Length: 251
Image 1 (spheres, one colour):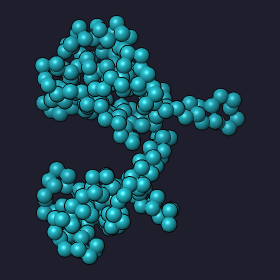
Image 2 (cartoon, one colour):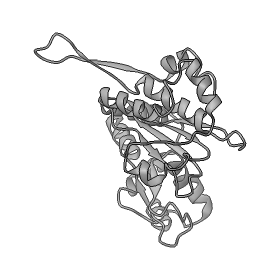
Image 3 (cartoon, one colour):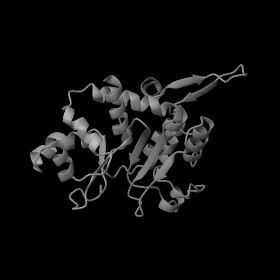
Image 4 (spheres, helix red, strand yellow):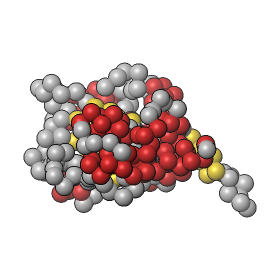
């Protein structure tokens, strides 16, 4: 985890991640204020990962910021009795054991946590107060990882996609790659896509025209768990549709 993103006074988070939007309400003097991600929720997600990570494992905490969410991944998963089912059912979590009590005390001294067992309820409370979707908490059946996902507030979704589309469309991309996106409005196989482009089903053509669209997130596999499946097809994503709309509007 990069210290420039999270430090003791929170300036990295506030300056680089958090955005605020003011929405005036007709007939009311006070405007509504929303954040793309409530600062307290992001801080709690990071503190929770630091608190519950096993420092005997070499895997670092991973923080990924996407156009529509923030993901915080740590290893291993939660301590029993918390498991995948409890997290999926959004049930009240009562932990009877803690992996790093001294780390928890240290975070509390730095005022980064309120106390044991308060992180997840705090995340849920501040996300709800901000009008954001509930945080999503995940692990597998063996509790080998703990993934916290904070969805962006709905009123920021359009801005996030538009910013990403603008950046990507401005790149030097072969026009035929954009044609691939249009073809994939109907799920199509590699052979079908290349045939519509007028090319033979060779790997070099796949690498030049289909793979860039896949890497950008403009198309996705219909069978992602088996990339080489004989039934594999490619379909356009929401981001891909936005790219097509942006290109059409420029013409």
